[in-house]
Image (tube, helix red, strand yellow):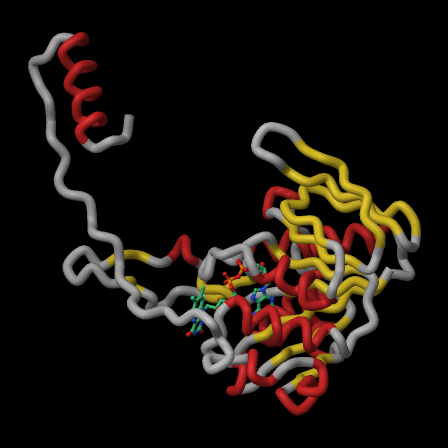
Length: 264
Ligand SMILES: Cc1cc2nc3c(=O)[nH]c(=O)nc-3n(C[C@H](O)[C@H](O)[C@H](O)COP(=O)(O)OP(=O)(O)OC[C@H]3O[C@@H](n4cnc5c(N)ncnc54)[C@H](O)[C@@H]3O)c2cc1C
């Protein structure tokens, strides 16, 4: 099975702090990481390869030149090769322009299965995977907790719902979006790190994929949505300490506070 995993390089949002004085985000020193849902997607692809050694795993990332780092990291985990899609023309893209570009790059690749993460921890929209499927006219299964190859043309995906799961049978080629809970991603191996420096990496700019997409639908210009304003949430005010209350009075005080704030 030929698998492409779409991987986004994201700031580690667990490390982003709010400056309480200025209410702005402190981004200095925040490391860039593989988006967690995508890392589970890489693991899912590598497990398929473990069971079906003929399989190939290609990592595709769109971003600035430093996004090469996440591709090399995935290769060090066991992926075969990578494609970095990078060009100033792709910058400032919203999800529509991002998915248009990624779908354009995928049209250059022979694949059976495209895996994307459910959601990126910075943009947080969960739109890119399903949009890629729509652009390419492929079936899609989102929220995958498990992916199993049944035969060359069929996979089973365990799809998470709030209170249950579905096993969905889907014909390849198709798109699956994976959840971080799917699997504990494996570590890079020392040999893998070594090999990743010499692994094949294609770098595609607009010229390499422009035949495959509508150039009016890429980058900032091709984005139907624009971020008009971005600001930090107001910090919470100081808490109120209720003292000398009986248990009943304390419960009533808490309930009335929650009602006042329309929480209940
Ligand atoms: C209204 C709007 C305007 C924006 N404007 C700008 C802007 O001006 N400048 C700017 O830099 N960003 C901008 N962004 C952010 C940028 O569009 C998103 O980061 C990008 O479209 C991916 O969306 P997401 O992060 O929500 O990913 P999701 O849809 O949550 O990602 C789902 C999955 O898709 C795959 N994926 C997503 N992006 C990539 C990628 N680049 N490469 C490979 N795989 C990927 C990953 O597998 C990921 O797990 C904007 C976003 C929005 C919603």
